[in-house]
Image: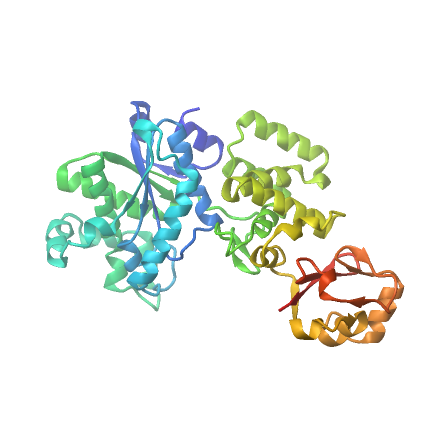
Length: 427
């Protein structure tokens, strides 16, 4: 398959400008996607566009990833019901560095003619005066044209309205396309379907200013089968930064996908070919309870985003929490890594000085923590074999626990019943 054919098969082609496929068929083509620096990490909602650039490069084309140091100061109104908060230069700089380091994990920057490049539009806007910009760029795109865009019309019709700052966004993005077309021979811009208006403004700007020809294509916005927003959990965004979303949580996000979503995601977010995908789907349908699709998806993406070691930890954590896996793997981890593994699980902190005297188990479970509401209930469940410390079942309520019995002399994993876990931290 060529690049466009593959996007079609994977359900990743929403709009395409006439002539785009023919242009790509001529040979290596330069194209770009912009990434909005609203945070210092991208999230799973950004993965589709990152992987689109990877597929573009694998098809023999040259990918540009644009990080919006300038447009990030303005804020894209597309799909937004109200104006974004403006970011300071320091925060923007921190965000740009974080995003750039993540993009470097996916794209190949040392493969010859079609090596990837990262560009920052602040580099060409920082010395561009406002008067020069409205003279050079503003006169080529009419207000009528800009107001015809859905993203503008919806905001103008709302009670909130739209500031001139946000209104200017599509012209600034259009100029980005022109700059890359002029200086880097970049003739294609890609993005999500909500960016179509901004992207075609760029192609129109290139045509009107220099009589040039440029092209556009977009991918659909991903939605979950139940209608809820993709990439969100109860805890918020699922980030690509392991410090914001641990590899275990990242793995669980994909593992918990519904069957309907997993059938779509395996095509959208992996590089399995058509034959491999179809075989996985058939195998999954024979025994859906084994969640083969979800496991293949979770393993592939966790390794791609976080690496083989992080995947191994995520698998061991999953086996420990939901199976009969050993706890030994935690002994080699530092404090931050252990806390990431148990993020989202109820945690209690006990002072090191107090713990040095050793606790009887009932005091620890009921008084020093609230794992049990009373010593009586704790004693009853221990007697019934329903409480474990670090995977070892307690056999007596007279047990005493000290720091030496804990993971790294600091952590105690308490299991109450089959599925309720708690983490006791000694500090």
